[in-house]
Image (cartoon, rainbow, N blue to C red; front, side, top):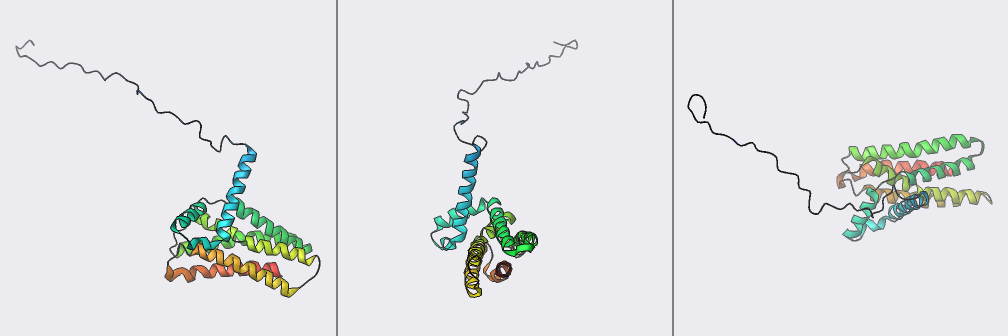
Length: 218
């Protein structure tokens, strides 16, 4: 009771509830392997397996027209993009053409290396400006992998030229590689471009591989 005769209600002091640990704390899975724990040879083998998987997907574009499950698996592989494969293919093509160029080898190496990356970037930007639902690095990755047939044709011509010269044979080999590369790229890019704009997206791809084919022939 207060001094003025009025009774005031008393409020008990409330304390926070005591901390009770969980009866079954979540267990951390320490058995799942991570890339931080793997050795250097395992990392190299994993990257090589990833590169080979993307090469199979890109160079066999008929898989895009099979079952929906295979379509999803294909797109899943391609969405996990990397630039190691395109870099190796680009270096390989640049080295082969520089060997065949003789004294102009350094100039040819620089031109081919820059052309591949610059051309892939321009083709990708064109597809994105046309409303394509494709990421920049994903497209650059696939376009780089699609250079592989042209790289094979350059290696074949380098071997042939050590024995004899044949313009007709050179033309046949390069045309086959050009059709292979272009078809693989067109099938892939066509998945992300609307039908009415697909032609506009395909033209830069065509000229990109035409220019690379021309550099292999000269």
